[in-house]
Length: 511
Ligand SMILES: Nc1ncnc2c1ncn2[C@@H]1O[C@H](COP(=O)(O)OP(=O)(O)OP(=O)(O)O)[C@@H](O)[C@H]1O
Ligand SMILES: [Mg+2]
Image (cartoon, rainbow, N blue to C red; front, side):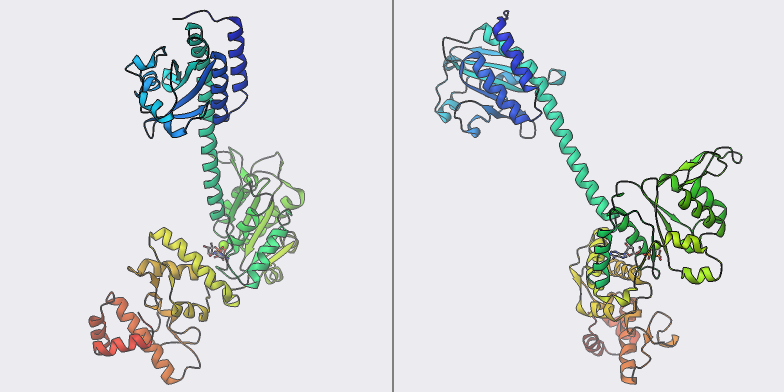
């Protein structure tokens, strides 16, 4: 059946393949392939089928002529195209209605009358058949060995191009998936600032204004207010966001190791010491976050000052100056101005680090942040505990709104994580799971005999009836906690009747 191709056909096939190679868009390639192939062999209709492994069907992609796209969805082995797909061998058929392999039902569905067929396999890597290129009804005469040879050659070239386009599409999809995932993770890591207080809105707006500015910022605030969180937000919303955010906790590292952690070390400084870059080097072009900066030793402060002023430093044991471009964010809950007065912190370094000060107010001074924080933290805690909890009861939120939060956002986070862990099949968190400290906040501690020393506090101005209520509510919660919620056993411990317990629970909103 093979024959030499005439030079005109050969030239046309080369032109088609050159044109197909100009795009990586698969639908465009398939449409062009069918159009040009139909023209070269002089057919009435052309179709390209690709195998869809998920559905185990041959799906029609590009075609010429008016065809209902679903009408040509074949099973492997069905019709001439299906046969070519299964055998991997071209078929050239002049009297289809006499050929048992022909699927006459397709003609019946499309209303087209097939007089002759030329079908060639498309083969991918390892000679695996990936689809079929099929032409129907030669306009003049019959398909001949020239047409067959031409389409076999076109199919070989087209298969390579289709394979590349498929690979490109797969890579592109994977790239998009990775991008989506990395955006999600970055959003998680970058410290999305949750809150509706004036302070939070103003901070978010300020961070937006600072995005291009590499100035050093000192973040201050009580423990747990969100200093590290704010530092991450500042970095990941800045123009340096694609460069590293390197964090160093100055309080957690002994003075002897701090220098090598910060500046790195050359090999051979001591026996067995390997060369290692320091945090400053790792943060080049990005941001170095010096947490608990108030704990940096005076010696390290002097070196830090030099890096900021000169923009270069030496590794421990090194002689070559290393240049860096680092933005420094630092945080402390110490009052650095009084540290300066006590000569524990260098004033010149303070001015370098504190080009801008962002003081974070304690949570008790921005209570509007509590409800949105509760929502966000609860969502995170539920994800981690694999639980479905819709929200917190109003009584819980009220207790949160009244509490003084000495441990700030971290304390709120801990409280909610604890409540989520303890809650059983609740759809909302109730006061039952609140820590005892929420009975009343502020004021004098309760004597140990009455359950004090466990966080229960009585307001300094409580009247006796008020104090009694607080103590009652506290003791009931404690008994319920101890008995895993069993009312009869809790009533026994409290030495009251079950009915009295039920009434008191109702009175105090204990679910
Ligand atoms: N505005 C906020 N939105 C969402 N989460 C927050 C916010 N502020 C703080 N958090 C969360 O609260 C927790 C405590 O915050 P962070 O560790 O940043 O506080 P900190 O001030 O650095 O504490 P420390 O003084 O102990 O270093 C973290 O889990 C943080 O993600
Ligand atoms: Mg911190």
